Structure formats: C-alpha cells, structure tokens
Figure: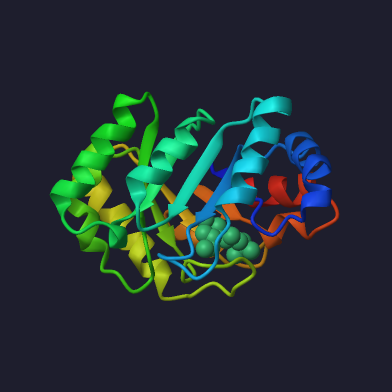
Length: 219
Ligand code: DX5
Ligand code: ZN
C-alpha cells in the first residue's frame, strides 16, 4: 500500500491552519516538511517550516516527515527534534564521508527518531548502498532539491527501480520515498518504479479536493 506525504512548502501562511485541517480530513499519511538553509540550496525556509511544525504539533497527531536540505545537518537535526518528528532525512551530498553519515544516522536514532537519506538526481544511487541496512528510508529526489512546483525528471525513475531491485536482492526492509514533481498524471509510473511513499506538494495543496487526489494517488 502506497503512503502519501504532503509537502507544505508552497502553502501560504494565511492558509496553513485550514490546509493542516483539510489534509488531515483528506487522509495524508504524513506532513512533509521541506527545510532549506540557504546554503545547501538557494532558498531559506527553516523559520516558516518551524512555525508550521509548531501548528501541526498543536492541532494534529499526524507524523512529521522532515526533509533537511541543509549543509549543517547536526544543527538542523537538533532544531527539528524539538517537534518530535516521525523521521528526519538528510542529504548524502551534505556529508563528506560514509563515516560522517553513519554518525548522523546513529545520532538521529539515539533520539528515538527514524532516519532517512535523501539523494539528488545527479548523484549515483550506489552512493547510499552501504547505508541501506542502517536507515529506515531512502528519499529519491525526482526533481533537483530547492523548490516546489518543478517538473518530474524521468531519468530518476530508473534510480528508484535500481534501488528497489538492490533492496530486494539484499532482502532489506526499507521504504523508498519519491519527492518532487509528482502529480496524478505521473504517480503510477513512480509507484511502478518501486516507490512506496509519495511526496507531493503542488500536486495536492493547489487542488480543490485534497481527499480525492490523495485517495487517487494511493489507489
Ligand atoms: C523540493 C522539495 C519537494 C517539493 C515537492 O526541494 O524537497 O518536497 O516541495 O513539491 P512538488 O510536489 O510541488 O514538486
Ligand atoms: Zn522534500
């Protein structure tokens, strides 16, 4: 069964409370929190994303799926642990070595939080193979990290199927989350490539009826 994690990156502040409510009614499985530090990617979103996490924690019990697009990973892990997220995901491109990645993985786990590794379109999927047995999820970017509303990059779908094949060969049990440019008109090929968690931002929050889009994506 596919799960849906809705990105609130493009939700205006004046609409966030209504959106949180409507997403809960619409049965999103997670809120996807896109944290950008202005260094790993151009945009800076952490202040508003912290505010949104605060609102979510006060009115909803839905789990937070925190996607760190940051250079100083430890700094932002510490900030977002305050919101008791279900999972914190950082980018493999933000660490200098596998050892550093393993340290951060263990640190997140030691704080009773699940951990994911994200990988940008240009990075070879093999870069995360040695970490698969240490994490709960791999987040395969289907757009270049940095903004919402972009078009899905088709070539990333083979990365998802390569990863899925490798996970099955190694008999591992980890989630594959696909993130970026996913809409009703392309979600089927993302799912058949092997993703079992779908992130969608503008594909959901810019539509009228969240529930029917989310149900169709899960279908
Ligand atoms: C991009 C973010 C994505 C993005 C998804 O850097 O990681 O989560 O906000 O939004 P859409 O679905 O509009 O591409
Ligand atoms: Zn994201």
